[in-house]
Amino acid sequence: MVLASVFITLNWIAYIWAVTHHQATEASLGYYVMPLVSIVLSVLFLKESLTRATRLALLLAAVGVAILIYQTGSLPTITLILTFSFALYGLIKKGISLSSDVAMLFESGMILPLSVLYLLFGSTTSLSQLLLRETVLVILSGVVTAIPLLLFSEGVK
Image (cartoon, rainbow, N blue to C red; front, top):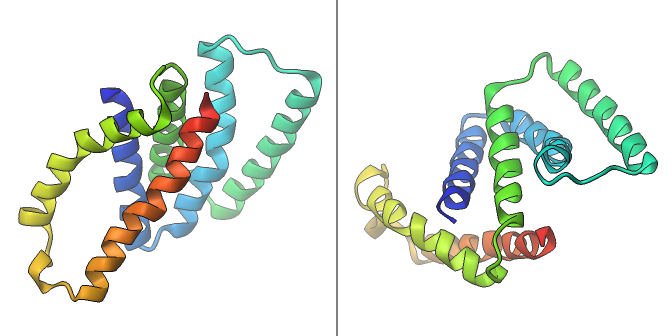
């Protein structure tokens, strides 16, 4: 569970960094590559076998990703961080027997102290400076993030 928390936190931080540093394309590329890495990790660590159709789909997807990488001109570090942090998060979640909501509560609880410390001391904007609208948006962003993550966690099982 601790490793899952570390990987999802790394993924969130990397994504936020990428978007705020005008690297949204590189971040998107990370999420295009991630399913391919997840499949490879599943074959290597979970001993899953691939059908002929799955291998063909994997090959087609890999060609598509290769074209995207070629068009981008390189495989940026942020792409690799996003790809592997989320793929490893999914691999770890596959081995956790807790229900998705309990596991996510645990993961969020692990991140909470660091998040509060950042908001209190590391943020350039004080919480007291946020308008009511911004405060509501910050809270809603947590809900908007939690729902797909819960669905992903349930789907991994």
